[in-house]
Image 1 (cartoon, rainbow, N blue to C red):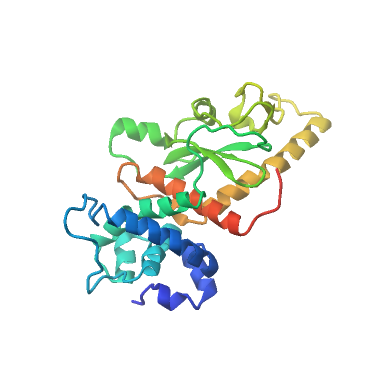
Image 2 (cartoon, helix red, strand yellow):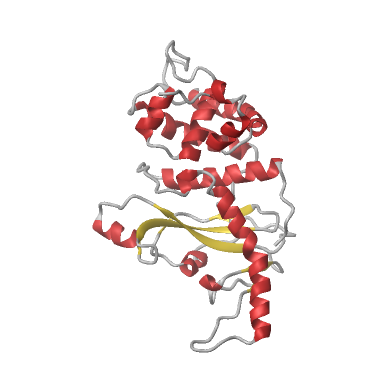
Length: 302
């Protein structure tokens, strides 16, 4: 079985992008903050998640990741390919038990590095002046069916005939995720999530919503929403055109969702069970979207 190594793929730019979701230049710019976050984390914690005592962190002789580039490469390929942990471990020369330990213990380090760069999405309300029109959207992510019957019923989503977790993203005109909500069970509708979400919007800003947020309002915020078609009737042509124009303005949030889902771990069924890791993975993939957009700005506006 061929090994999946940074040293083997760094000269194959297309293949490198395919397995990491980053270009080689973007990867190299992420290495220094990852190194700083890695050293700070390993000075206080061991690989198994226990606090470090007397023995300092060191690279042992047969470590599968002798360099920081290999460690970062392993994390990015885990997020991008969403491979089975046993198979992914074999590709990098480690057993099945070690692969999830390396992944779960190092994902917070990657998130800390992206936070240090200012690329992590907002998780708390922090209003700021001059916010351009924003668009909220609910996004669902497939999960393994829970074993607990009440949790199973809460996560079951009949529309998709699957079990999901759900988030609400708030995206602005610059394709930046201003806010990422907490994780909710898949059966919860967009409107209740929005009601419980402290949107960081100042007075006088605009909110471009779809009909999933019908009846949701914010004080001193202009709500722009398509007109709902009456049952058994058709909308007048003028209102249909207005709905199409609003849809075109909101379309960019779907581009953001697609960019976040370049990491297959949030597109395919997530198979991680550790408490809090699903929310961490979603925040991490949103931060990678910010990182790429910041280095290669997109010009379209909402």
